[in-house]
Image (cartoon, rainbow over all chains, first blue to last red; front, side, top):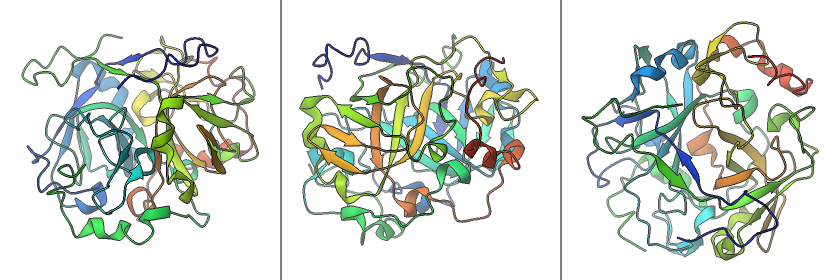
Amino acid sequence: MAVGASCDSVSGAFDPVVLHPIGVVRSPFARVEGMPLQSVAAREVEARIEFSPELAPGLRDLDGFSHLHLLAWLDRAPTDRGLEIVPFLDSVRRGVFATRSPARPNPLGLSVVRLLAVVGDTVHVPGIDLLDFTPVLDVKPYVPTFDRVEDPVRTGWLETRAAEVERVGSDDRLSGD
Amino acid sequence: MAVGASCDSVSGAFDPVVLHPIGVVRSPFARVEGMPLQSVAAREVEARIEFSPELAPGLRDLDGFSHLHLLAWLDRAPTDRGLEIVPFLDSVRRGVFATRSPARPNPLGLSVVRLLAVVGDTVHVPGIDLLDFTPVLDVKPYVPTFDRVEDPVRTGWLETRAAEVERVGSDDRLSGD
């Protein structure tokens, strides 16, 4: 999708950026079918992140944290769905940025995962909703003071639907448009 | 930093990925000095995201949500700090992935921000801890069912320090190593 280049006054801010994966997800999910919809629905799944070995020093102290934010590159997400999609939990077209669909302009995945153990260059994260071999771009410690919203939270079209992810899979979330 | 290329068995998972910014932050912060350390410390700051105009259809329905995850490219973060750093709130070297430092292998910023209004291709987000003209890579609705950890949370070396971000600026967080 061609984005940017339309704001010449913002010099450089729309230039493409290049990221180098720091690791790779290993999970039981070879295909999207049957994969949990969000990590909250995958608590019992055994999974891990295998870091690039030279990055292992960056993992020091990580094991003091109980939860991580995992930023991944959803390399197998559809790229042809446009800017309005029908989310899996819905029957109405929504702006893609108002959804958690992987079929978005930059297919970045954001999950909160529980940290079980750090062993060498491997981080064990049970409960993950990502395909095997998904590239990992960053991990950050989950810190409630920064990350947890305590105010009343409005969740728009998802208001009544978010809880459903704990009981449904993703059999056809990518087969709609 | 050269990462990847060391896991030949994982074909493609360590290949560089290219992202195209979807928008740009406009904030009062031209420089890092004095900028809040996290968005929780910047609640009263007037700021906005100006999206690439052709992406405006993707913003439909976003205004139903009270909070967003904002993923940004920290284009002015230092790139020479290595894998162990002394975080601003600490005096001990920590693995960079156990910190929220912007000086990380892929300088991705993750903030939870309050959504005030969506006007055309502009999203008003008071309370932001990002420099003016920071490229934005993605926004996602904040959904407590997915994003809020309710279990007891361990926060390692940050245990007693996270609350301090609400009273300190970032005058020298990038001047240490």
